[in-house]
Image (cartoon, rainbow, N blue to C red; front, side, top):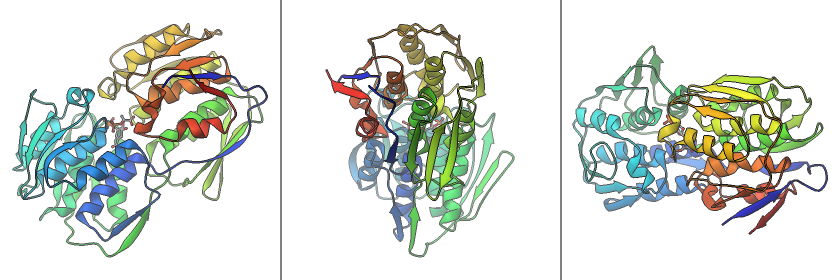
Length: 409
Ligand SMILES: O=C(O)C1=C[C@@H](OP(=O)(O)O)[C@@H](O)[C@H](O)C1
Ligand SMILES: C=C(OP(=O)(O)O)C(=O)O
């Protein structure tokens, strides 16, 4: 599906949008519910990734295909490895077979897990024969993906002696580790994270309980971008959010304040309001805690005609696509002066945006959604726009409520 987006004929319509639960929280809770079936979950994410996780968890033997879902790949690897009697081949999309899992597999193997690589060493597909894991002290590199760490922590309460992890090297995407521990705390599992050591206690059962997933902050980022690019007075309401979020991407409210967007909490809704046209000449940010909002921020800065220097982006190369390269190619097509290294991105301020450019999305939902807000400034095409279903299936429908000119071509 190719979409043509064009600037709204009038001032942007102020809108009220409900976003479904965080896909990160959902995929953690789905795994925890498989271990402790007394948990019930409200406001589940309706994303493809959550569906892949839910479906995968039901399989006992045979093939499990989680498509593009990184969290499902990593969390299910740990889950199946620890479930005696289950035997699966865990695989995914072509891109998933290029996303590394060696750190996680080796950590699980050191605990006694039976996992083999079906094709390339270090990459899915994996042949997993579940068994009781007996070793509970593990050490693993922490600078490649926090998902390996969360995967281990999620199965920890189901192990006889819990788990003690030693994280080696600089820890990346820390808020996602804290999210995992925060959810464990919510269901009554003891844990601690001090220095480089994470400990999780064992738990035999949890009493019946309902956990409400907060809506997805990464999905909110696209509306922050839209409000930043819109006229003063534009407002968008989003629900349902919490002031004390488990999601690191909630830092958006602070970041976008620098771009003229104020966030007001009203009950469980947030009102994003464009209050000022003041903006820095260049936005400097270190984003190793929040890799998923890097694309949104880079595109917002380009749309505003300002520069940015974004660092801490070393994980972007192994996501749905090499996001640094994809940003460079697509922003350059629009006239940007941009350079990237393995871990940072530099965008020069530039006042002009080329019109009528078709943006390629590289099977990456965030490429499609991050570029869409530029439609406030110029007409733009989005190739393979359906990719958004990975995290936000209703994205185009919700965007349409703002009365941007969206049509299929
Ligand atoms: O644990 C999670 O839910 C996630 C962790 C992050 O990955 P990395 O730790 O690999 O950066 C993030 O990019 C991803 O979208 C979701
Ligand atoms: C990186 C992402 O997801 P995953 O790693 O779970 O595929 C994402 O949603 O931006």
